[in-house]
Image 1: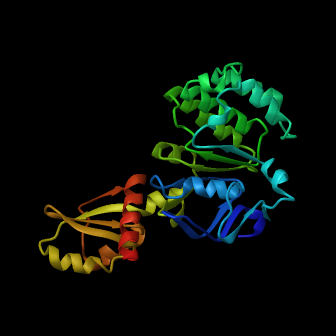
Image 2 (image 1 turned 90 degrees about the horizontal axis):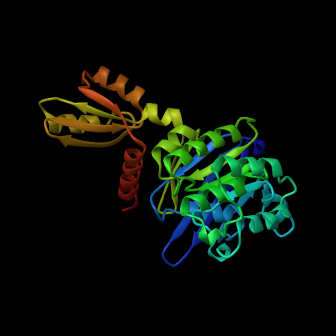
Image 3 (image 1 turned 45 degrees about the vertical axis):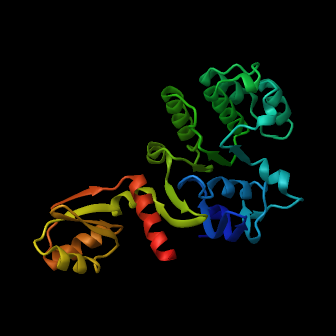
Length: 304
C-alpha cells in the first residue's frame, strides 16, 4: 500500500498508563473507505482517535495523518481537513448556544459551507439557538454531527455516532454518511457497538481489545470466511483431535451430540472436511459480536 492510499498510519505506537497499555500498534487506514473499529469498552478506541488528533502523544512510535506527522507547524492545517464527533459532548460548552459554537468554529475552517450547514440543521430539525446544555441527548448528538460535517472534511472520525439517536434520526444519519462517501475521495473512521451500523456502512473492520489490534478484515470477506460448523460423528473425542488440523480453526467444543467448530477460513475448511470424509450437519455465518468474542478468548489464551 502506497502512502497515497492511506489516510492514517500507526507505526509502532505505544501509550503506557497506570491501568492501561495501548499497543504496540501497526495499523493503516485506507483512503476512500469506511473503516469501523470494533471492541469492548476500554479497549482503546477513543484513545486511538485522540492520538490522531494530537490530543495526546504516544510514548513510542509515530502517527501519520495525510502522510504527515502532527507537530506544532502543521497541527492546524491537518485538523482543518478532519471532522471529529467525540463519544461525549464537551461539558464546558453547555452554557453556550449552538449558533455561538458555530460562529466560533467557522473562523477555523476555511471550507465551512454555510448552505450545507443550514441544510443539515433542517434535515435533523435542530434549533441552533438553544443552549447546548439544554438540548436533549439526541438533539445534541445530531448538532455535533452537523458541526463535524459542515466543513466537508476529507477524514471524518466518529466515536459511537449513533449514541442517543432515535431510529428515524439513525436512518437519516446512515443515509447522510452514504452521501458523504459518494465522491470516493473521503474517508470515515468510526468506533461503534452497533452491528447493523457496521454492516450498513463499513468496508473494513478492525477488531481491538486490551489496547491491541486483534484483526483487520475486509467486511464481506470476514463474514464469508467466519462460519460456525456443526459436525455429528460417533467418536467425538477422536474427531475433536482431528479437527485441530482443520484450516482456520478458531474454537472447537462438544455441544450435545454435535461438535461445534468455528473457522475463519470456511472455504478451505469445507474442502478439508470433504477430503477427510467428515460431513457438515449445518453451518451458520457468525455475527459480529460472536467473532469478536472468539478473537478475545483466543487472544487471552495466547497471552497466558
